[in-house]
Image (tube, rainbow, N blue to C red):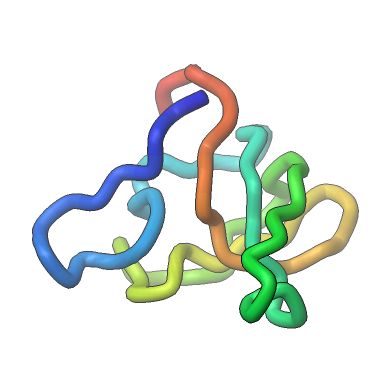
Length: 79
């Protein structure tokens, strides 16, 4: 499992957009799970956030259709 990258202070919580690509296995936090911290595992279909970083994580759509912010990258492949 790839650890969550932090980067410079204030650069966001979670991986940078450049570390993500369709087909990567990730864990996301869905909107309704923000208070619980529950993570959902899946494979990235689309990257929805346009900026390089986001304070709450890069938003993606999984192949299952679920949408959330990436908290962990699970595979060790490079981008």
